[in-house]
Length: 190
Image (tube, rainbow, N blue to C red; front, side, top):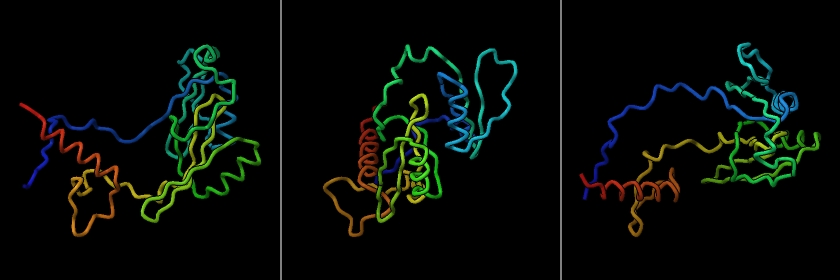
């Protein structure tokens, strides 16, 4: 049985170009500016003077960090306590060229961090996770070691069936997602 997958949506994707900035609430703009400058290498840039609230804009690596001061942030979150560094939590990730050097510099600055390793078909990604002064998690990694492969390019292999030669570019989760998508499409009723 041959199954063709048609595009279900008649809408075109929005005309996006790239990620422009990430905006973060912070207790102290200047503590956060120092962190993003000293630890991550961002540069303070001019922001519109029409804003009537404390904040700062930083830029580097093709992305902006917009800080918005909210001294009452503690009312919403208890960031004052050392929170566990959980790689599965929300985070911002930056690629780096030398994970070992990142860890040494974080140690030299007395910063807490955790590491993780992701392996896929012989490729290895080393990850380092740590928090900024307001508890936002940052990841530095060599993520370019694992290629970005669209799920749509993965061969669909229903469970229980086997191919003579299994594709090596897509893993178990990609296959599960394709199976789920296919089943959902077969269950559509018009």
